[in-house]
Length: 490
Image (cartoon, rainbow, N blue to C red; front, side, top):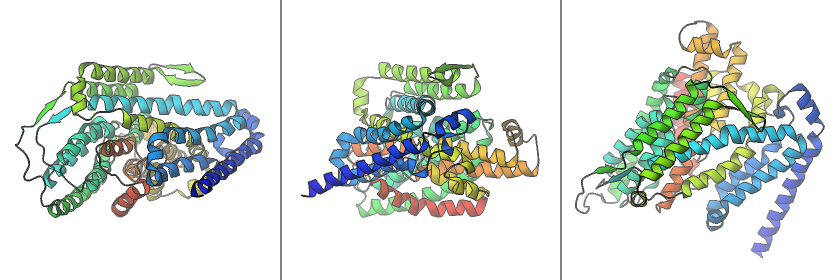
C-alpha cells in the first residue's frame, strides 16, 4: 500500500509539473518573435515558476540520499536527466531557436569547460600519494587545513581539495569522529582559501577576464584572514574535544613509517593546468563559431591543454599508485551527471537575474543597493546557483548603476582614477567577490569541490551529513561570521 501511495504521488506530481511547463510553452510562445526582434533577454518573459525544475533537482539532491540512499546511488544520473528534460522540452517549444542558443551557450561556454577543468585537476592530483604514518591529531589536522587554505588561492580550490583530502582521510582512519574534519575542510580549503587570486575560484577569474587586475583580489586578504583565523581555532577546539573523548586514538599506532610523497611529477601537470587557465585570460586569439556560439580560441586551447595534462598524468602514473591512493572515477562522474542537470535547470534563474528590473526577480534586484546587500544577495544566490554568472550579473549591475565602463572600472581598481563612484565601486566589488566565494561553503553545490570532497569521504566509509544536515553545520558556524564580516567591512 505504501509503495502504491508513493508511486501515485510521484505520478501525480510529474503530471502537474508537465502541465505547468506545457503552459510555459503556450503562455510564452507569443513572446518569442518579440524577444528575437527586440533582442531583449529571455529572462523578461520567463515566469518565476519556470525555475521549478531547478528547485526539484535541489530537493532531489537533498532528500533522496536521506530517504532512498540505495536508489539514489544507482539512479542519480537518471534523476538529474529527468529534471533537465522536464525543463528543456517546454523551453525549446516556447522559445525555439532562442532556447537552443541559450542551452548551447551554457553547455559550451560554462558546463564543458567546468567539467574539463575539474577532470584535469582531479586526475593530476589523484596521482600524488603521501605514504607513511601521518597521525590525525588535532595539531596535524590543523596544519593540513592551514596548508590547504594557503594553496587554494594559487592552485585553485579544486586543486588544493583534491590534493589534500585523501592524505587527511588516511591520517584520520583510526578516528571515530571525522565529519567535522571534512566539514571544516570544505569551509576552508574548498572555498574560503580561494579568495586571493583569480586562480582560486571561478567568479574571481571571471572578474579578471572583465578587467579586474590579477593582484587586486589580494585586497580581500583582511576578510579572508578574519574568516580563516576564526574558523581554524574553532576547528582546533572541536577536534581536540573529539580527540580526547576518543581517548587519543592515534597516539599508540603501529610502527612509525617515514613520510614520503610519490607521483610528484604530477605537480608539473597541475602547474600546466593552472598555466593554461591563466593563459586563456591573458591571450586574446580571436573567436570561432560553433552552433551559433562564439567561443574564444584561447578558451578552446585552454581546454585542450587541460585534457593533455590529464592524459599525461594518467600515462605517466602507475595504476598501483592510484589504487593505493584510493583513486576512482566515481566522484567526478557524480559531479558530471548532477551538474549537467543543474546547469540545464539553472537557465531560467540566471536569465531572470540578468533581466534585472525587467524580469520576474525585479523585486530582489531592485532591493540590492548597499555593499552589504551585494555581499548577502550575491552570497546566498551563489550558495545554490553557479557563483560565476551570479558574480558577473551583480558586477555588471554595479557598473550600470554607477555609470562606469569596464575600462573605467579597471582604471579605478588600478588606482588611476579617484572619485566617489570609484570608491563606491571598490567596496561594492569587495562585497560581491567575498560573497560569491565565501557563501560557496554553505551548500554541497555551492562550489564543485564540495561535492567531490563529500563523495571521496563517503567512498572512504565516512558517513557525511545529508544536504540539509550539512547546511545545519554551515549556517550555524558560518552565518555568524558572515554577520561579523558585514559589520566590520560593509
